[in-house]
Image 1: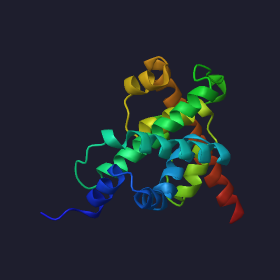
Image 2: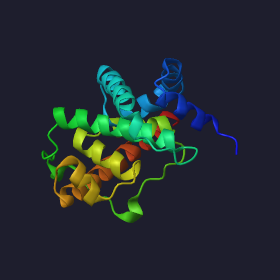
Image 3: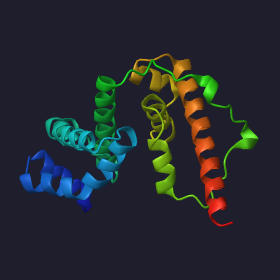
Length: 188
C-alpha cells in the first residue's frame, strides 16, 4: 500500500524536518489564518495566534495520530481554533451580554434569504458581531459544537451559549435584510 502525500508529510514532520515544517506553513497558513480571522478581528492578533498555532503544532506533533487523508488538516485546524479561543479568553469577557432589547427576535419564517449575498459579505457581517456572539456563532456553525460543549470551552453557562447564538443569528438576519434593502435602493 502506497503512502499518501499527507502521510509522507506527517512522517517528515515527526522527524522534525525543517523543510517539512516550511511546506506545512506554505500550504496551510492561508486557510489557518482564515480560521483564526473568524474569531479574531485584529490582523496583528491573527498573525500572533497563527504563529502560536504553528509553535503548538511543532511542540505536539509527537501526539498526532495519522488516521487517513484529511486528519492532518483537521488536527492543525483544531489547534488554530483552540489558540484563537485561548487568545479571546485572555482578552474578552464572555459573560457580558449586550442589551437584548435592541435586538429583535427573528421568527423561523423571517430567516433571511442568502441568495445574491457573497460568502465574503456574510463573513464581513459575522466579523461585525460582538466578540462573544461571534465566537459562539463560529463554534456552533463552523466547528459544529453543541451549546454544552461551547459552554465548557468558554466557561459560560449552557443557556448563555444558546442565548448568545440566538442573538448573533438575529443580528445577522437584521444585517442581511439591511444589506438587501441598501442593494435594492442602489438599483432604483
